[in-house]
Length: 141
Image (cartoon, rainbow, N blue to C red):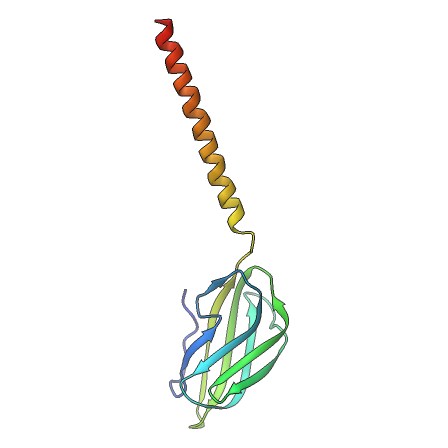
């Protein structure tokens, strides 16, 4: 999955949580971005579902090169989310970019397991019927 690439290379995003392209089943309470140098000002930091409005939260700077958006409500809804940032670096140049991540349903694995078990059961019954029919056919000859 491709993320939104930075437009300026003065301050570079080096890590994020969730990671760019990550798919998770856990609720997201905050989004954290780590840069290669100190950020002097956060102009904007938003998280929004694809086609939706920005989620409410407060911006924190736990370290000079780390910014975080602590969400008012955790992300618990399945969907794709876009994080966009605009920051001012120590060299007074604006850097713009973003990441994309996906929140998956926690019950997403159950239907697949049920499907596979159903297929195995049907194949098992089919094989048993085939063997029974073959044996009865041989006995009738």
